[in-house]
Image 1 (tube, rainbow, N blue to C red):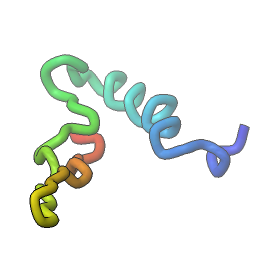
Image 2: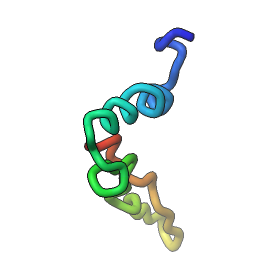
Image 3: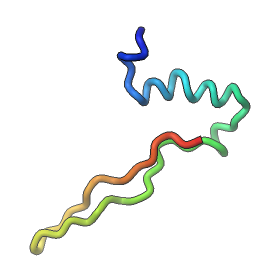
Image 4: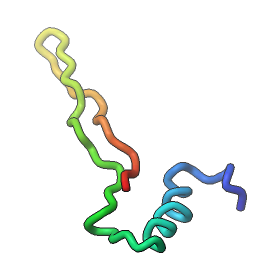
Amino acid sequence: MSKKSLSERDICTKFITPAILGAGWDLHTQIREELSFTKGRIIVRGKLHTRGQQKRSTKRA
């Protein structure tokens, strides 16, 4: 299997997370994955409203 055929999420799961854990990091207290930091912009059109896409951070160690 080529790394070029893998998604970003697959690369993180198969290579990055095991390397971080192997370096002694604690999965539950030191690593967060895809954390949302906003609920999305509110879009108003007349009397209708909707919410845009959430803003998310990627893997953070």
